[in-house]
Length: 204
Image 1 (cartoon, rainbow, N blue to C red):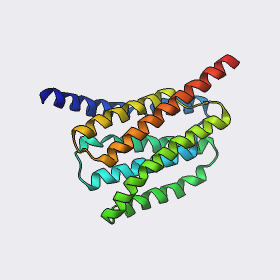
Image 2 (spheres, rainbow, N blue to C red):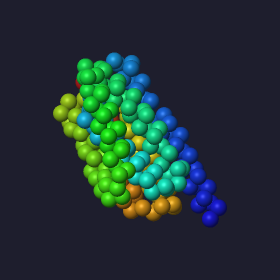
Image 3 (cartoon, helix red, strand yellow):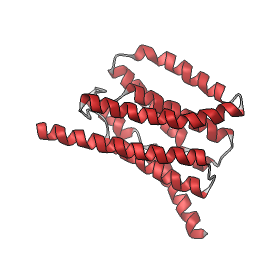
Image 4 (cartoon, helix red, strand yellow):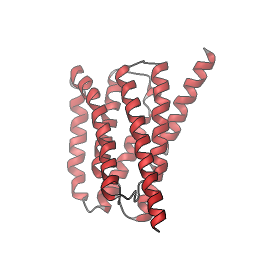
């Protein structure tokens, strides 16, 4: 049991540490290029929505903080990324409506148990939609642009680690299913980014 507990602690802490810098590579790429080319605004908004639902769900059921502490960290980084994308896309006027929707949604999720349960089940679809939105953007442009391979690779690792920690702690099938789906889609997006990056290099 000591070995299993050690692995659990390692998975928890490594996930937290990775999530602390998860979006930084993407942020640095955007700042350096001063462009949001290849990065899907729709994907980012959907991803942020999914993370907010997951945070609300875990806190509502008082799950161990170590099993979901990365969500507020990632949400903060996603908010900054969203502002960057809105700025470089010339859509900063949309920042206020997004804020109102996210804050209002957070309040509504906590009103009833059935609401947060339904939202959590739907969050898998929402988060999956965010990945497909990014994939569609890549397929349409055939250019990975300013999309960070490192960020998507790190996201794949965090999903794998959370599959392990979920099995070791809450064993919540809804949460487990979500992480399995997200890991598979993260791998797909990462592979697609690498594919178009290679094509771009050959063209050059």
